Image (cartoon, rainbow, N blue to C red; front, top):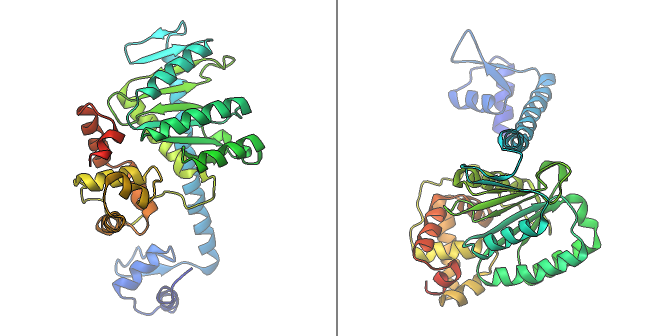
Length: 341
């Protein structure tokens, strides 16, 4: 875990020998020493027995912070439930409570999804019946063929359920979406349409206790954007169905460079949907070698070590939001615009 120069610096500190500024900085960074309160140019090495305890305490603090972030979702839901009129209807905040009417909820979600530009992010901690999965499969395939994205988050325990396994296998074969899983207690049932865009919408389902057909329809752009950010946290913490690398950003990546070239923007939009470089090249009428070169150049310019890190940054990049808004302003869809790129 520790490099040789760090261990040598620690040994020198324990012997009371002089440490240069670089050695002192390394010991402080690795929590092997603390600043000397009597001499700002020296450090005090920790006792060997104390070091594992420090690392354990730091790990507990990190875990507590992650759990606190997840708990914010339920706090917001509780606040909405307390402040929203119980008789249903629409508030002036762009929120509608739908109660006891599954058909109405389903129709509202379908209308929002059909009008989407970016796509739909869904999460469901409950097991879907096999018949519903079959119906959704046909819809999702057509949805993805239109150039829009579909992300689905389910509970970990469904990984061993045969209907879910068969459905995910067919979805992957037809490139109809991405599926990940997370412990059921860490997320709720939502559908988010075009998060980050001015017309974005969200549906928080099973909203009222004892009413599985209830839903909170949210149209306030700031609240939809917040829900989209929470979903992104769930997604980053979830396990990909096939066990591949998570799309998490590199910690040391620099993201000050802007992406403005329209071809690069098109390539990134397609790559986030798991399209291959050969597929992108054919769709954009470019050479596959050109597509590969542009992706490599983007990754190196932005300072990312992996494609996963690049796409994780891109998913929350202001350049992506601005480009999608520009496409929407032209009155066209992503798929149509990409073909002309």
